[in-house]
Image (cartoon, rainbow, N blue to C red):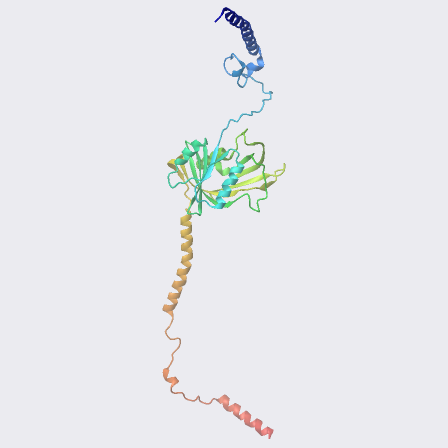
Length: 349
């Protein structure tokens, strides 16, 4: 390296040093100004940072009761519900499942699962999809639809028998709501009477309630989800808020949930509650067949009793009467008739 090149390099380094010093001084002055700014100190968490990049929002230490607080726009309640089903469900159950996905902005989908008895695999599927709630539709014998609602991974898990399914596409359900809108949840007073209903109410609130400021939700409310307990069953209805005076129009889907049992953990654990009034669908069909067959048995028994009580001969009968036939004796009425005829003949002559 020649002397001239060394001189050029030293001059370039000496020129860059003042510029770096000037930038460093500007940064320090900017940090000092930020420390003196009270508006930034109000929203600073912990000790004063060196740069403005580490500023985070926090509540002020003191505030007056008349001060108007700005609304939060941060997605805090990060509830995610995984809605999917097993293989072999009916078309009606599949459409109801799609309707629920469209209503719930915080819902996620998953392909159909091939399960027999080991439901603990659903916890792994929910973990892979980053979901903390699961709604799993399971069809048995291609006629009985069960709904599992679980909180992953700690539980509890509630099992329902789904009855009286109706989709949004029904002709009688004329209402319509905007996609992604948040619902109002309306619960019956009976949910606060017994412990198992309280548990189900809290689980439904977390599952069906769309979190505030969710990225896929809309900032308005235009429909109501109602949960009513009738005959120890939960009747779910969805209504659109048509006008400001409170008039409603049903949207759908609509179905009835018959509580079966509650487990302690997610798709596992101890059985903490079992519905005493629950009757399995197989037993219902067996009872209906028995009632139908009872009518046939009564008819058969009545026929047998009639055959036993039926006399062998309806009236006494003598077989010799067919061989020896004797003319009937003349009756007095016949004689009188003949005399009358003779008198008529005499008069005519």
